[in-house]
Image (cartoon, rainbow, N blue to C red; front, top):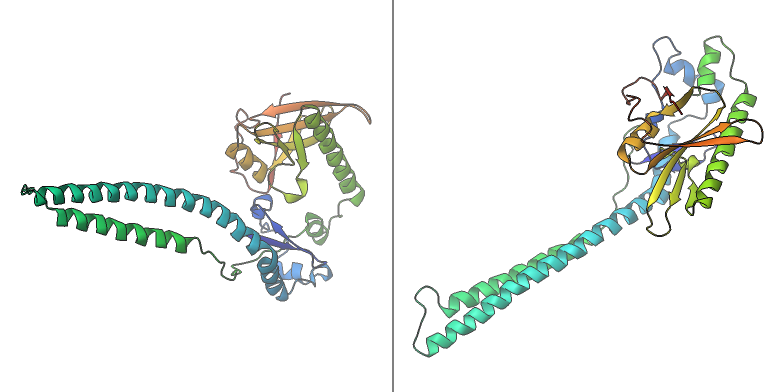
Length: 298
């Protein structure tokens, strides 16, 4: 399953994770789909989006996916080919040698009662044919090409502010959202600097929505550290984590780090690195919604 996201400006991008993990379905008491699609903000959502997503997948997603699969598959096929050739060549050599020995015995008037040279030669020939057939099959397996992608379904991601407004409430203040983004960027910058000071090579992956914010490479081994960064005001006793982040922490427990930047004031902060952050909290992904608040004792 591969995912393409399209925004109202028509910009498409490939999501490298399961996006639905960060969303929740509409509640029964919230506006229905028809009401949402009738809004002016949603007039850009048409059936043409399916063909647009398909074209983007053909041009950008499928080639990368095929390259990834081909690389992994060719490595396996190369190892398989070497193992098959080594094993069958040894057997062919053995039966060739055995046939020659039996033939010498027969020529000297000392035939083998259990086996003759023709049987040994036939077995060597059968193994040779088997080797050629198997190598041919492996050669054909290296010839990979992609079929056209099939769109299985789609979903509309509705901003929570729009739902709140339709229910009679006020939309969230955009300034608050911008302030949150600035704080998050500041927290990531702090962690990036710390990772560099530790001798690692960090890359900001926040926009890729992979379940972590920073991918930090260990130069000597090439091993990757995955850091989810949370910025919070000093004294706050909870953080918000998504299902995607929790799943990644469980899938990569030895490489996942929850990096918490505690802002003391405008210029000072305290940093906490927490390994296996959810092991002792009892938190799971068995909850409704896209995220949950988690208490952490630092």
